[in-house]
Length: 483
Image: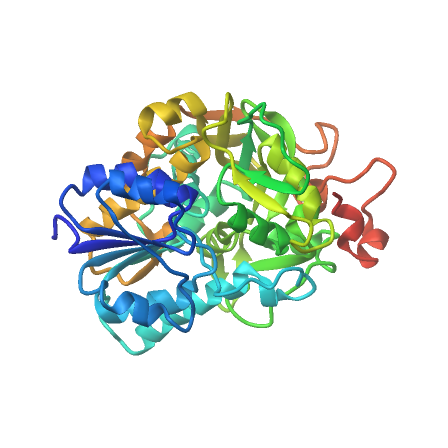
């Protein structure tokens, strides 16, 4: 197995790229590292020089990516795609042809279609299907696995899929008195079914805060503003559990005409769609149902097939309450586009206090809910690595774990987070996520006196003067998805 990469190319040197820089250089002391960014500011250039990284200011597009990268990407190059709107599918296919390693933190198109919410064309489901097509084509051609490409592996999507497996093992040990570790996708799906998992929420409450006032027309966030805006303007998406077909939302959600059929979409953008969730420190909270790849890949991975039909699948989605200034920034998307955004800012050095409580909430119809995840504080993040806040360190800690795994597993072809060695990734990423906590809780979004059907309508946040019955659903989802 190789002990290192021939060289490293980082596409995108925004918040996450800068957050990764010290950890990357600490691990790879002698390797050449090149960072490429569309806007290489003096501050970004200074960080690159500090870590002995070469840098280039260049916008990478569908038309020039081969010309830009051909001279620096070869066999055993590690390519890290950390930018927004650099087409993952094309980069994966091209790096595979070069024998290069590849990692991205989400599946991106070359260009997002802001405001397209009434069809699946602008969905993470469709983007993921383009990558699955690459995987399926290699299988059909009986091509041996080539250099490893890890797709959609940051904090979420990414490490949250590892947390789901860790949580399932905890529940199995606690309630089924078994310590068996599943060895295949089929076995993990069977365990999820046996545990009665109906809903898996990626549950995040970010309380990092600053006294620096947000300017009028300014969109702020604790990670990539462009990335968050793109997600918030997409239709809300979720992995669609088999139990949902008996619920009132089954007739209202949008369906996909082809593909794995593990997910559906709501004809409303994520910035306007709210759901109830729970986390140990935050308690019950309301978050936005933001479109994310893990909602689709986890639901697909945990599907139990009965011939051509799915006999079991959990509902999976991301419930996100960002920092309060970021939450207020969502009002700038009220028109369904970016026209009201006049400036952007990533909260980092000005953060004064707070944690990013990020984990997964496993909801069973047989056992208490289990939340497992991180309560990383801004203070600890700054102690661990420079150029970080709590949010970015959770991302880059997971990225570093996957980079290490690729060195041990150099010829796996294209893989998603669910197919990684979860114990290896958990062990290597855990130090960056501490403190890690897990807590059982009897919780239901409608309280204790309701029949817990665990269907989506029971989690949607709706004003007291509105009801979500079958009649309301037939009129459309807008009544349930409120700003």
